[in-house]
Amino acid sequence: MISITGLRKSFGDHEVLRGIDLEVAAREVVCVIGPSGSGKSTLLRCINRLEEPTAGRVVVDGVEVTGPGVDLDKVRTSMGMVFQQFNLFPHKTALGNVTLALRTVLGMDSGAADARGRQMLEVVGMAGKADAYPARLSGGQQQRVAIARALAMEPKVMLFDEATSALDPELVGEVLGVMRKLAEQGMTMVVVTHEMGFAREVADRVVFMDDGLVVEQGPPAALLGSPREARTRSFLAKVL
Image 1 (cartoon, rainbow, N blue to C red):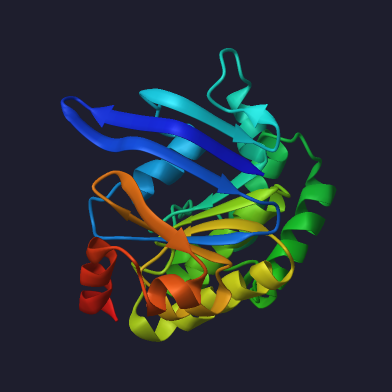
Image 2 (image 1 turned 30 degrees about the vertical axis):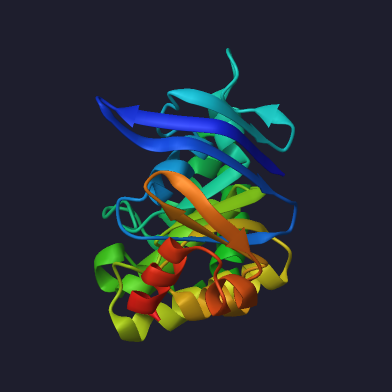
């Protein structure tokens, strides 16, 4: 579903990604872990071209995202992205936030957009808050609305960039619960996370990044339980 070859990204003289090769199969859940500044978020942002790669190739569902003349708007409809910050429009209700792209990007009429929007809010357990504005929602509820917004576009891939890191600890579980349910339903997911318990339980594969490189990867039990590389062992000793 996702094929990344030789991906590099520099900001000025600083090379953040130094040659990433990574494959993600359809229906696979890949959790990306590593210290701050290792390039995890930049990797996600290059997959959907929110950041312009310096070099390399990204192919998603057979479409070369980094190819010349690619229709980025069309490509991005196949990739949902959930950020650390919820990025909801404060002047729109939960339903209004979920349906905005359905109307403006997909051109759906109000009735169809509202029907899909309510269905997606139900998927994330927010059906009862369709008419609530973001200021009236907890952080966990806002993040679940953000997930519903991404799902409404019926993406083939979901990218999560530290989706729980801005939440109070007691709200983390409700968002991870939604992500767990998506994984069970077979959504292809790339999840940048510090939640090692979630990675151990839900991921098919864990990828450890450091200093712009994939240091090692493997099944959660192997990578989190008996990592091969000293850098991985050092990182896990601090976070587990």
